[in-house]
Amino acid sequence: MGSTDAHTLAGAYALDALESDERAAFEEHLDGCADCRQEVAEFAATAGRLALAAHVPPPPALKRAVLAEIGDVRQEPPRTPRRADVTPSPKGAPWLRNLALAACLVAAALGGVATWQHQEAREARVEAGAARTEADQVAAVLAAGDARTHSVTLSGGARGAVVTSASRNRAVFTASGLDGLPQGKVYELWFNDDGAMRPAGLLERGKSDQVTLMDGTIDKATGIGITVEPAGGSRTPTLPPVGLVDFPA
Image 1: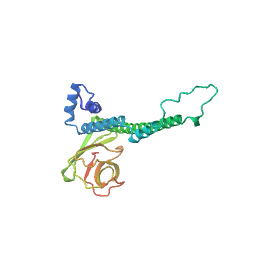
Image 2: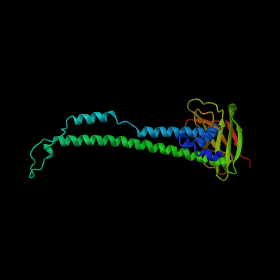
Image 3: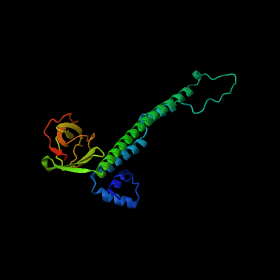
Image 4: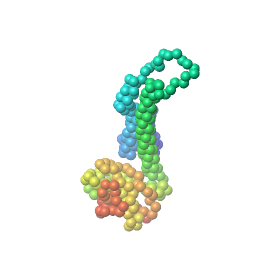
């Protein structure tokens, strides 16, 4: 199994849908691939959310409302002679009104549950699709025939690298041993456009080892930088970079 092929099996592995030989080979690959470990965790979390959305119990108020109405509903109509020339009046059949009300309560409550479940499932599908798309893009850059790796030492002794592909016009940033940051601070990536810094995404807080697809295309960037910024990121760097990488001409 090639490393590029292995990246595509993360979803099947998280759902326990691999054959035994494929599973063993993927687990061997997983030991040395932080990107796949992250993707497996994301798929597993998404599968859990989907399962939760599919098995949500009805709200307690639904049962109480239905039972309250059923208590006032006669199970059978009065046994009276039927007359073809008499049309029952809705005003004379309270049990029908009560039954209709109970049915409306059930329909409204179940409709709310179904809508919530649909929204949860849709959000989970979007998140899973986004994670899968980014993982595919990362794999495509790393496997590109013109991929180039540029290493950098970050403050605190952490190691970083950026892998670029001109044919893909994208870059992947990796880091290991990143220092933890104070609350309200985050690492931000930048493309260096010949001295002008262009925002290229935020790193996840609290993770010392990371692999991320940088936001945006490389275009004419001559390197990248990484800074510490307020949570949410900045439009321009507010502090000196903790690491800089120049792309060879």
